[in-house]
Image (cartoon, rainbow, N blue to C red; front, side, top):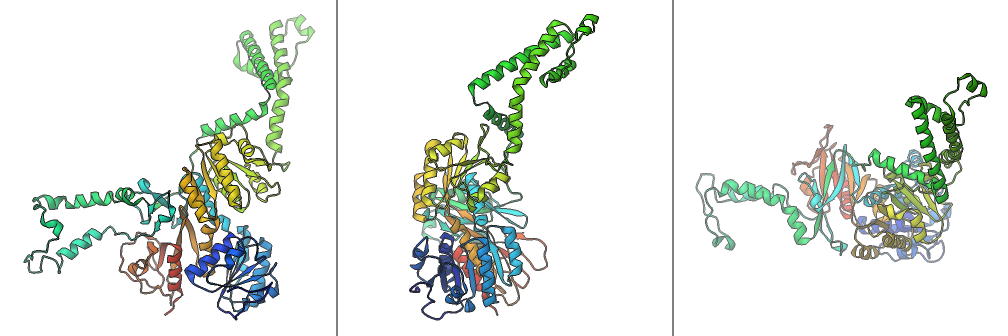
Length: 633
């Protein structure tokens, strides 16, 4: 049901609902998250119901009302019944506008849960202190690690208890994996991926043996053996030799080790959650960095005539240096006098000194010194230009262009919130980065310039812009502008200019992304709203998500939950949490214990107050957990 007319309140009185302010992609995904997985009533406040994602939001089943106001005024807050709402999510507009709206809503409803989208995370932390029940999140900060990791061809990680959780695929899965999180992975049809499939645990074989040979099996307590009914497939098999039982364990272990490979071959690829003690960094040796720096100086010698003049001058200096060394037979003194001559500071011989026989070395030495001094006049302007360019480029406020030494870098297309975060994270990892932006007023230009990252500005064709960004020598192109068509154009143009380059594209539309995966290899697609919306929805419910991990276009949430007095988790065990599906308990901390126990083996122990569990969950699985947490005894 939607409101009719401009700025009118919902048709029916509503309470205990959630209000989402925004008509962008993140608002669209967040509303879907709330109505489909949390099944709560949602009222959407948009600036213009005919633009952006507002028309699609209006068509969603489960949306109680869509109200249109150009700004968040007192009238707009009354129209969405903010006084009786459970929560408010502000995911559109600038930081200042969202802060003002949050404080206004809190004044009308002191108990409302408020979640703000803020780019400035430091400011967000301070705003959280002003709100009685609020959280400030950055959608770009949540999604950027996935884009940065995809550009490097590796999964992103989430820090938990001193370890870094990440997704490993197929042959990269090791024996110490925490759990299988996806199977049936097929790049040609990513819709086949199944998250959190049912998996037999490592003790499944022992449970089967116990059921066969326990109290109800063929061996009785008194020692009498009862013949077990044989399955039809077993009837024709010959009897096992005496040593077969001894090798059964080895065979079972071998089968377990090959289970991953079998799954990959039979039903597509699989993905598992694994933990690393340290976050992997991109290793770049000092020799490669020195080579890039030396190549970078070539931008000062772009003229063929200048290169010829400088090479002739250098050859003349070397010849003069050899003459001085031959005459003096003292290498140190020769270096000393040559440097002074290059700087124009040599002390010449005077006629009186020559007549007295106290001159420094005769005719050939004086000729050599004159040659070095004249060549120094040639080198001085070039050296001055290099120093001035290096020291003053940042002070002029002008973005620095990529140098000729830029190699094995990542090109980030679009310096909005997401592009700025991605470029910064890659820079922190030690990866060379070049940015491209068409809008000279983009807010991200100043941020990346402060980091010394080169920026290619201009609204010309992508082909020319990518050439200036040194596409031929790049390792990946990450297109993260706010428009799907622009991102796809940049990716296709990049692949045309460099068939080996890896492309990572920001796409909202799932069908579009599916065709992208099926068409291009060495490519990845991510959606900022798809990655960020689950975290915003969880925060709106009062839960904190530690991070999100990507399995192609699917998202897994990593969260740490504390069992409090009155929580619905009290008395539940791992079976209760995992059997309904969508959730895996990957670690637990028993009350008063300082350490997390990874792969907590006791599936029957019931949770008590003070216990903590770390879970990996799908969006629907985490919504179910939230419902359990909300239940109080």
